[in-house]
Image (cartoon, rainbow, N blue to C red; front, side):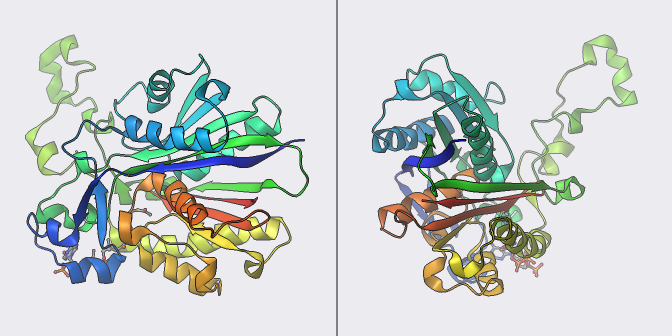
Length: 348
Ligand code: ACO
């Protein structure tokens, strides 16, 4: 049975750097508060540009495909993870297929928010293991800056997020002891509303008796009302402390699950790439697993939390800096809205 190796990796972040001081123009916050609670110093915004989630995904994908020594024509399948798609539908996968002039291959969009990229890797890995595809493009990309509440009301969320994209080419490999060893996926929908954005969605537009006056014409219409706007239903809502508490339990759990499944321990890891949710969460996980500083990679300081893009951006920078070498044991781990959490253990 073939395994999946990362044959090429790429990333893209927009040019505009937004510092914590820049955000202070819009909301009551401080550089000290943001750095102390999250570790974030700056983030990138694609804001006020023509760039979209797809165009950023394309830039990262071009680099990954080139580094794999391939062309877009060699790609057999696309898995695109994002929670900020260009359109409500169709998804970004087909838009990327069109933009890159690819063959009429399959394109699948994965949601799963901050865990989206690790879920996407797991999906692609299954197609490779079964022999169905040889080269799969896996992309994680987000344009958060278009939809955040930059007033003081939304400051607990808006200071965290940034824009960007990362991509890998997952390729079928026959060499022993290389590639993805296992992936582990979890969810708990009981906590769905702890970190959620309600619109566009059908929940807030459920049928209500008062709509009867509109007759059949009211069926299926989207009603955007002032109370919905007032309740911030078009912005992400987050109970930060609740996310934090669960993340610091589930991250170590899912990392240990991947190590245990392969008879390995945290000491065997060359590098952990945690989803860049918050530097304090990463530090907590590092402490819990007794990992050295050189075993954990963080770059949230520069990019903020880029949700589905954070793992491939961090992995790409780690690789570019020579922190990942052939034969290294690398764990990708993520936790996010849903709640969903996931890990992938691989031998580079
Ligand atoms: N600037 C200044 N003050 C702020 C800001 C801000 N940007 N945001 C919130 N505050 C204030 C609050 O209003 C509150 O004030 P009060 O005490 O007068 O009511 C105070 O700071 C404390 O608010 P908390 O929400 O309790 O702050 P906390 O210390 O928990 O930090 C944070 C908030 C950073 C969001 C934290 O809870 C956290 O990191 N949670 C994890 C969530 C996370 O990482 N989410 C990322 C997205 S999800 C994911 O990727 C997993």
